[in-house]
Image (tube, rainbow, N blue to C red; front, top):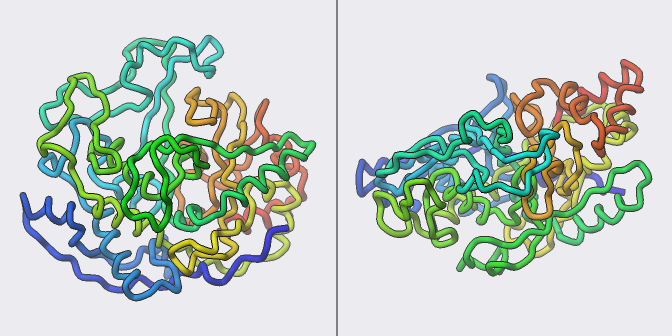
Length: 424
């Protein structure tokens, strides 16, 4: 049985930090590379209430809180072509897709050639020579965006809302053995819920900061970040986003992705940012708190369990005792996720495989900061929690039975369940 949540995840108010203005041109590049910028804004609150999020985890040292502020400033920093932006890009800053640590406003579109059923990936993907991600914006002498082929009905285009980054350090800290334990327990179930870890090849270059991991290129690791769990560590997640969403290369991801104009560089020759710039952003993500949760009616949690929601949205997972951020180490992290892949059936299939994830698989999203989110499900199609629960149903979906159980609850118990989930 999961352990009760540890009190150590509670957030505390963000300290007031001073913005260091460095001017334009080379000075702004220095700010990006050397991570000398501090966060300018106060704590974020939801809809004008005094409910803080996007704040450092409780229990961090003063030096770690200061480092959080530096990384937060870099996370919000808009990059320009002379910083290395492009040649192709989607957004100009990390916060363009994760404003205040949440989802959006940016989004990503994916494309894949599918068979006649509308979701199975076709064997021949040659009409998409630059991959499955649409890159709509160009700069730095690029002239041709990466877009879906016009008027080709065999190309399926789907939308992904980026995940929130709240509490992601806790996800990184979860023991591999804990993820494997939950998968083994689910494998014994008779209701069709059989989550699997996404074993992926580590794709970045080694990070000289070896406190969090010592992965080498090609190492097989358990993915836990991204909507299909294709990335294993926060620094790799950060370097991948810089490269893939902004065209910003780094020592971890030193090459530009292929593009129709054949450009191998941008207006800033060579690698665009330093390893410190990547790691400062990564530390901000690692240290961002799980928002403090108000006490909820225990009957709502009981209804959550009765409907089978907690089978995949596991309330707590144990973290490593040796995780370098002490407040996140050796604790029961209240993530409400098993960090496993689940087959959601063809209705939600995007046809794109990532690691061991198929075109029908999605990783269980952590229910962290859910009450702040304006769009639910991977594409934001659900606008209420009840809509999101009902959207889990469908032929072949592992969650179909849980949706049936939810619908079978009394109106009072359904309301209690929804109120409980709304408190997370």
